[in-house]
Structure formats: structure tokens, C-alpha cells
Length: 366
Length: 160
Image (cartoon, rainbow over all chains, first blue to last red; front, side):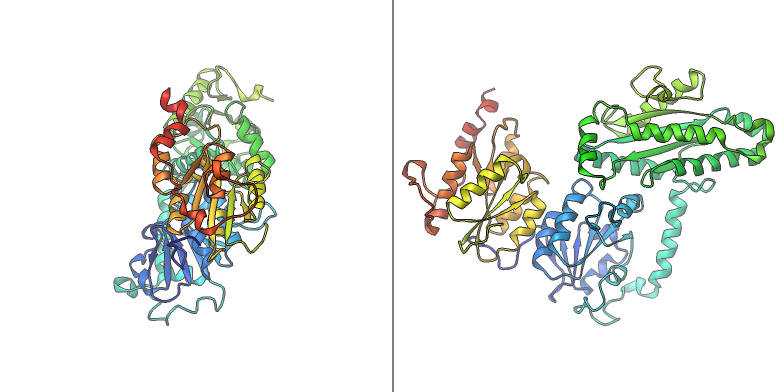
């Protein structure tokens, strides 16, 4: 190494937590990830401020586990994880906020045939002990005994597993629509915001579909609220079935739904390149296909609560807005998709309009 | 990867099939330097750790190395790694970003002749053909570009 180089590879914003050789490398804002972040000094951890430093440190050190806090790392995460994977034998654990779970889930699946980019993910906030549990057996020799590896203070009185279960339940309640079990508006908005940021960095595409059920009030009034609830539930089930596994579906209002279609990082380079070239101009073809399929399946749905005269008449109206074609902020996309939805309603319902093209029903797009 | 016993090692960051990586490989071979090719700065960061005790030079197109807010330059500086960036046809760089890179010791090159000069470690006029590289000369020169050099490199932008 050149003049003045530290014998141990220097990382930026790197905090040597313990004098013991570290078994865990943490990357990012640890305070966001761990309930017991204050107790991090009791563990044998090193902390890197960013993925670049972490990649260098992981290649030099013999870590058992690398915990990557996903927040704020979205743009370069895939590239960085590939380098991290190549540079270390450590198990790579993603520390995901709840709205990042769909991305984390994709990253721990081997969908490209080139291996997994990460080994596991934990939904945050979590406990450091959970991260330690991810280490291969016998690969955390620097950890102390049980007393050292346990949370301190008030947290020492709490069973981490029970507390985490309660947290997960609270998060579920805070982000899920209890009627349809789809994501709620808060989750959809935050997930869409993050998906948009990733799309900006990777020059990819993100598409938002807003739709509602035509004449929903009529069904409620004529067949009762139980029937109305069943329509909403069926709409959610069918849309989830029609979507790609990584797309996120939510109920964002009374009978209004949203779907966030986002780029799958594991598709082959050819697909990604083609999409990048066409993202500015072409229609979001996959989203359109999903929307068409859903229109058909929803129309064919059989709902006993509606009685025989109402079978096969359910329709939806919707609006599709896509980044970068139709807007560059979440506010833009929601607003434009909503306007397209209104246009679809005014034009006679039972159609989904593409933003930016007057009277452009997706049914007319091949 | 070319493995040799040279005390110098060049980490070339860029598209493996691109002209820059190919030209840098040829140049490094000409001077008898070890060379590793990395697709991106993250792989390059991992590579830094694999060459303890060697004089490292990281070379790449400026636009590629600056990704991630210039953190790669900071990491390189902390570890005594010299960075050499080719500006190429790029004429729309923000001056603040370029100055920040220069303050971190990044050598900015307008073309491959500048890169060659950097690797040879001596002014172009005195350079002799051949692969000889002298350790003292290599890092003895004040390689940091001055602000005047920067203006010359970004001539079109600053004049326009």
C-alpha cells in the first residue's frame, strides 16, 4: 500500500466498537436497526458508515456476519452486495424496515442463477442477538458469554423474542388494511417513494396503478355492507394473484386500490437494458398486462352474496402513471394516476387510462 | 488479472470490454505493473484490501469513480491509494465535485497521454520509451492538478 497507509484498511466513519477482533460488521445507521443499539459495545462489532467502506473492510477482516442496514442504501445496494459477496465469506444479513421487506425478500432469493446476494433478512427494529443467531455455528468466537451477549438496562427484563413478536404485530396493524389484508395507504406511499428513488438511481421504471370499483356504492346499498366487503376482499385477492410476486398491492381508500409495479433487479441484463432504454418513451407493458388480466378476472368473479343477477358485472376504472414517463415524484404519480382514473370514470367507467394520452384506454394497447 | 512481482499495482475500474480498460491494461503491461480490472467502485474497494504492502493506483473514468458522492476517493486517500481519473469527453462536471476530488489527491487526466505521464512518473518531455519505473520517481512528483490545470481541463465549460 502507498505511503502513510494504515496497516489495517481504514474505513470512513468506521467505529471500532470493541478492542476484541470483531465478528460482526454492521453497515449503516445502527440506531435505526436495533432496539438494543445502545448495547452494541458489548458485542464484538465494527461499524462502517457506508457500503463502500464496508466492502473494503469485509474483504480484509474475517467477519462471521455482515449486517447491512438497508435504509439509505437503496440506489447502489445490488452492486454493493455483489462486491460484498465476492469479497467475504461472512453471512450477509439485510436489516430491512418493514416497507423494504419486498426488496429484501428478493435479494435473499437466488433468482438469477448466480447465487444469492444476501443470506437472510431481518425486519427492523430487531435485537443484536438475532443478528448473532445468523452466524454460522462456531463462527462468533469473540462473543462473550450469555451475560455479555444480552441486552442491558430495562431491556434485560424483556424476552427479546416476545418483544419482537409484539413489535411485528404492531407493525402489521400499522401497515395493513384489516379487511382485505392488503397494505394500507401509509405503507404504499412509503414503499412507492423508495421504489421511485431506486428507479431514479438505476435508470429503471416504476409504475403506479390506481383503480376503484365501479358502482361500489350501489352494491353496498342494494346487497348490504357484507357483500360490499366481500367485493373488496375479492378485488384484493384477485389483484395479488394477477401481479408479479414482487409488486405491492394496497387498499388506499374506501374502494380505491393501488399497485406499485417496480423493476426486478434479478431479471437478465438484456431485459434490464431494454427497459432502461425504453423507460422514457414506451408504455409500461407488464403493468398493462397485469391490469388487463385483473379486469377480466374481476369481471368473471363469482360472488354468491351478490345474487345471480349481479354475477359477471363487476368492473373497475383506473389510471396508470409511470416514472420517468409521467412524473418524477410520488406526488406527481399519485396525482396524475388519480386524474386518469377520474377521466376513466367520466368516460363511462370500465376502463383504465394511461396518463398523458387523452382517452387512451389500455384495452386499445397491444 | 495479471500477477507479477511489481511493487506497483493498478486497479482499473470500468467496463471490461471498454476502450479505457483495454488501454489501461496495455499501459500497465508496458510498464510492467500488475493490473486488476473491476467493474465498479465496490469491487475496487474490496480489491484495495487484497494488496497489502503494494503501491496501488486506482484508475477509471471520472464519472464512474465519483459515484456514491466521491466516497471512493476518500477511501483511497485514507489508505494511501493514488487515484487517476480520465475526464475524457466529459465537459459538464460540477467544479465543486472536481475540486473536492482534487483535494483528495485525485489526479485528473485529460487523455490517455496524461495517464501515461502519470504512470511513467515523469514529465512527458523527459519520458523515454520502455517499461522502467522507478519507485522514487513514481510518487515523488507533485501529481495533484492545480486549479489552473483544472480550468484547462474543463476549458469549454469555464469559458462558456
